[in-house]
Image (cartoon, rainbow, N blue to C red; front, side, top):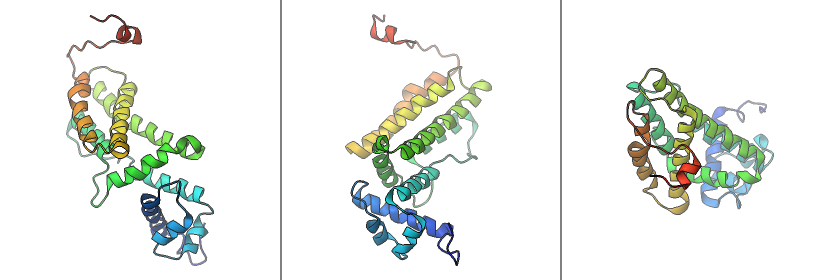
Amino acid sequence: MSSPDGRASSEETRKAIMEATFRALSKHGYADLRMRDIGEEFEMTRPVIHYHYNSKHELISSFLEYVIAQYKDDDIVDAEGHWDHLRIRIDQCMFGPDIDGFDHWERMKVYHELFSQAQHNETHRELFNEHYEGMVVGLADVIQAGIDDGTFTEVDAMEFSQLLTDVIHSARARRISLGQKEAPERARAAIDRFVLPRLVPNVSVDIPNDRASVDGDVR
């Protein structure tokens, strides 16, 4: 949608609306958020918001797309080999993009609040699923590239990546929801100590391969 003078549809205006939405969500939360609250955080007039978005639902869906886009992996990573590339990707997922002035944990606080509501909103659920699939595939691509040239041992790259993604999400949620500020750093250290060694070639690791061996008598 564009305004007669073209200004209200500019990328700068859209970004201003998204950042106002972020500030309003941080203050009021999703359940109590009103369009009026967003307007109070917006530097322009409130009608500009209503010109672009007909409802709170439409605006929040656009905001979620905006936040997710900020966490999409860059195509180019300055890495020295597959090990370095994988660790950079894991750090990006856990601690956010390396951008000056970018408050990762404040963004994640809002992100996880919307995530908790996704079961009630099909559009948001689809966006979150798309984002998590992108995280898994992005990590899996790095792992598979390392497998293909012999840097990493043979594993199921998608399953391995899903495990990494689940650990990352759990650690972020513990910090945000439970106030365990050390959780991401501890989880990141555990990944290096217990998970990534599984990728080292020619290292024998005795890991049960089914639930029966896990639940049964393992010697």
